[in-house]
Image (cartoon, rainbow, N blue to C red; front, side):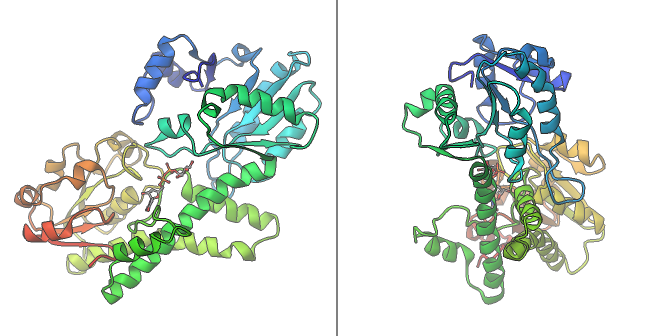
Length: 424
Ligand code: UDX
């Protein structure tokens, strides 16, 4: 927002995080973010605070809080959003009728925005709108500044207030709208559903191709061929058809489960039963990888040296939330394997969660003495490994490419017993 030219105050309840951001130190790994933060902080347009009083007078309050999966594994925990709104209410009332928008960015169960809207309905000038973001980690900066679309969800898109609400959001996004990014005005409910539907659909594509990849393993077909040819049908599209150990991260798994849970509450249990299978196929990929690892090492992992390349849920992030790579590494240890895990960005997060895991910075050190190598996050560093050089480090040249990114023929030429998932 500051990059777009606005004066922005970021609030967080975590004083350490606010101090780091104020010093332009990013609290996570995201390409291009450090430069953007440095530039916008230096411009004076972006400051950070822990004090809600500093937000008084703002025209728009963006709620960009986490909505983590609840401990019961299903619905979203809305506690952070509720408490932020509680803290904002006195500020809104003090605006004395001046128009103020509360724009939700967080992913929430459909129906949440309407409830929050009702809570501020009595405050003159204040309205809740829903303005979901669709950024991917690793591409957060470009996805935010150049999104595919902007979605505005309004309480009453045909009502008297709609024009003012749209005009205010248009002022926020003016530089983007000038570049012809499509902007869609919907109801609050549609805007909420766009986000979880998009993520659940993407999850469905991945689990679909992963199910097909199992058939490929059984029959000798190659999932990359199948994905390539079906992707050429533009009704299907090429993207999100990469078979492997499945999806993870803070969004796809959570949003899928959140949609199943909310659909159940709303009386549409049966129509969403298939999404449980999408989730089960995905988590089943982790067990599938363990089966392949056991088979590669003659049925028992006990005492065997395994090198795991990658811990983040995907490349270009240090995020290990629901990471297939980390989960597989932990399960290998559970079966008695002697595991070294390496990752160029995520090891601090790995150590914080699993201090006993053998986390190694240097990839060559992680490979040393391995009897089996598993590539589980497709960082460029691992895609570019030299099979001949790697072969001199390990105890046995066995590799399973859990992300289907390596040139298996080249690895085999260098003497490796190399396989992918669903690949010939
Ligand atoms: C996702 C959505 O893409 C984004 O639009 C939304 O705003 C937030 O959720 P993100 O969680 O950052 O973004 O990751 P994404 O790039 O979607 O990847 C999700 C997972 O799917 C990763 O674990 C990735 O490895 C996996 N994946 C992706 C596959 O297994 N196969 C594919 O073909 C694509």
